[in-house]
Image (cartoon, rainbow, N blue to C red; front, top):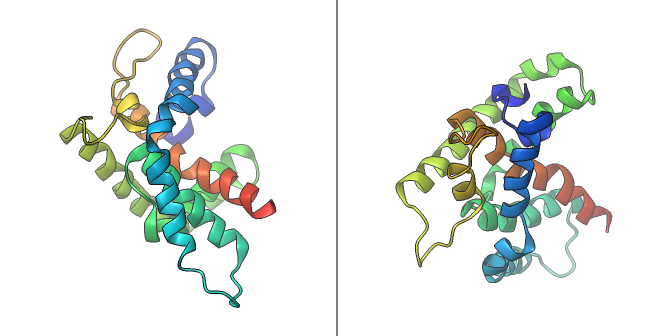
Length: 185
C-alpha cells in the first residue's frame, strides 16, 4: 500500500480507484485552479526576479523550485519554499521503490527518513491548518479542502491516512514530473 494508506489514487484499483480518481480530477481541473493563477504567477515571477543576468544556474533545481512553490500555493495554500531538497528526496525514495526504480531497501536510507519526517510534519501542519481555517472569501477552497471533504467508495469521509497520502501528491508529483519536464523544455 502506498504510504500505508490504501486510499491513494495512484495505488488503488477497482471501485476505490474510480471514486478517488473522480474526486481528484475535479480538484485538479483548470477551472478549480483558475482563481489561483494570479498568486501562482506572482510566486513564479518573484522567484525569477532573483536570477541575475550573466550568472549561470543549474536548470533542474531551479525548475523544481519554480514548479514547487506555485503548485503548492495553488493546491495547498503553502509554497514549498526551502523544503525543495526534502521534497525531492521524499518523492524519489517513496515513489522509486514502489515503481521499481530503486531497490526497496532505499526506503531505509537515512537521508530519506529525515526528509520523510520533515515532509510529514510539513504536510500534517498544512492539513491541520486547513481543518482549523476552512475556505472563506479570503481563501478559496483548494485541493486539501477537497480531500478533507472527500469520501471513499462507500460514501464515508476519507480517513486521515488517505487525506495525507493524496495530499503529498501536491509536492511529490510537481517535483518528480513538473520540474524535470520544465527543465527539458
